[in-house]
Image (cartoon, helix red, strand yellow):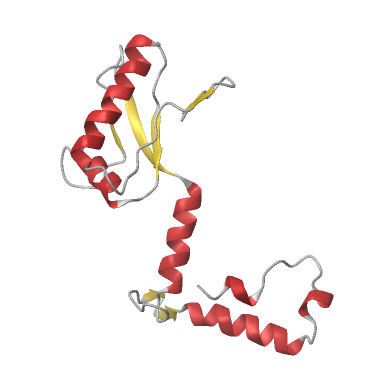
Length: 155
């Protein structure tokens, strides 16, 4: 999706299914898109937004010029020195946090999160919800604006 920063421009330029594309192929496709936007259309590409799928993470690492986290790369098609930033979209980041949290000492048990020496477990959220509901016989009556249900905790 091409979106204007200072205009109402919204244009779906490309969509790549990350479960069937390799990082190398994605590299070529994205740089071709940047070339079209910069050279043919005169638009400045400032960032690339994506989810955190494995091929995309590998694509971003292809831009590494040394040790450390890759969060930007030189825009080779810009007429002046300008970087393109790699940004993860917020809904996918929140989903990743939720999934890591839910698998900490629970569900798949693939994580063991902690903070200041204390475990962080999804079960704490479940217990908090159950305790709150047992204190209040009718949770919906006491909290009419609440939309959280037990089904939100069962992942």
